[in-house]
Structure formats: structure tokens, C-alpha cells
Length: 326
Image (cartoon, rainbow, N blue to C red; front, top):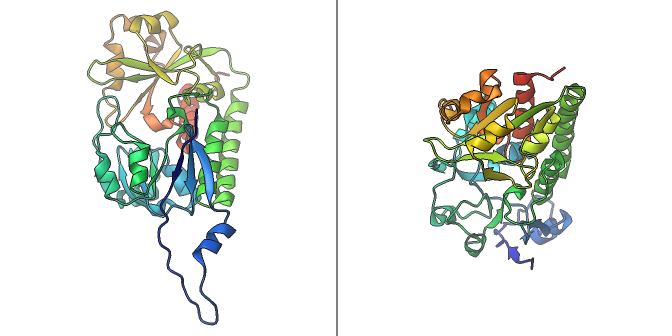
């Protein structure tokens, strides 16, 4: 794929004079900090001449990364579903103080928002790219765009926890927070290692991670390009749909019944109270052993997808619900 370069318009920086000191040259300061920083994102080279100062969040997953790096205060607006169960009371309070552009999502979990509304915020970085927006359109308004690697449409490799760690390190470079990113990665590695060690001798068990469409629409499941794959492996399960290299794809109830996983993990956004009912209402679902044995976990989407520190929380929730199998 031919790489395109998207360059962020620089935000003016005022020189500050201190008593007894000369003014600070912004360009020299950026160069000293290692700027410009160039990262590849879904086949596009994205150039940051300086650390972003005005960030718009169009998805909730990056919140815990930005918070871990100490740069959440640079988010000027947000849009989408930010489920309170993802965050501590303190973090929820800080998120609630960020102006919300929209909280409207459709039945499939897609954000409903116009590009013009985002551009009016004058961001220099937009995290997420919902339908109806383009990287080029936002670049024309001075904003770089970063998309989750697992959402790239081409050349998506199998996802591992290293995918998560690499993403955190990339954000650390972009915001000049390499020390904080290293600390966050080390903490997450330790937590994943603790779970993996606990499940190392677990008997063979199978699982499927599903995204039911509320209201009787399509049923989706996750393959090896999703964060569900390493999450299930670390928890001691075999993904019954690991033969697919896709991230997410539609599956028939007949195929689900045929593979008959020991455990079902159901993902959703917003009100999750009716999610299990979407599965039990499927024709023939009463033959699924996971339903018969009450081996079902319902949890909010970001506890599995996409790669973020919340996926490690989700891993620990899976083990808490189903045990280590020992």
C-alpha cells in the first residue's frame, strides 16, 4: 500500500519569559523532545510536529491509556458510550467533566455524529473514525486521526497482548510520555502473567465471544484478529472460532450450536440487561451447553475489544467468573 503523509497543523505556542532567563523557542523545545514523531496507522504515515494539545475522543477505549499517561486533561470533547463500570469513581468524575458531543450509538454500537461537529472543536488529534468521517477531511481541518490497529481494513495480523503494549508505547511517543507508558506496560504485563500462570494447568475448555444485535438482528463473533483471541487464551480457553483470521464476522445460530462452546461471553454497549435474552431466544439455543450450565458472562464491549488496559480488566473478570479450571 502506498503510504500517505498526513501532517498536523501546528498550534501556536507563546514564548514565556522568566526573570533572569531568555524566552523559550518552541521549535527547539519540540526538537529536543524528539519531534516530529511519525507513526504508521492503518497504512498511513501520521506526523506529529508536537505533542497534541486538543484531543477529541470518538471512542471510549483510549481513556485508560490517556489517563495512565497523565494526558487525559488534553481531551476537549468526547462522543459515544463511556460506561461507568469501566472506570473508578475518580476517573468517572473527570470523564463527566469533558463535554459530550453525542452519546447516540446504533444497534450495532456505531457512533452517530457528523464530521462538522468534530471539526468545530478544532482538535489536533482525533481518536477514532466513525462512519461518515474521513482521515483526509479531518486533516484539512488540522487534525490527525488515529484508528485502533484492529479496526484497520487491510493487513490485520493476529492480535496479541503485544498489540496492546505496542499501542501504549506509540501513544507514549506521541505525547512524549515514554516513562509513563513503560510503567503502564510493565503493570499490565505483570497482571497478564499472573492470570496466565494461574490457568497454565487448566483442563481444556472452549469459549465463544459474541456480539448479539439487540432486537433480533445479526449475531457476530470474534476470530484471531480480535483482542478476544489472546484474552481467551490467557484465561485458559480455546476460541471455537479461532479458525477465522477475521476480527469480527456474522455467524449463524446453527454454526454456534454445532461448535457448542463450554462458555459464552456476550459483549454489548449501553443497557446490557436484555443481552442474554437475545441468545436464549435464538431457535435451538436451548441445546447450547453454556446456557444449560449457566456458563455465560455478559460484559461491556471495551472489556474485550479493542486492545486497551480495559481488556486486562476483562481478562480478570473472565477468570473471576469461570475460575482457572484447575
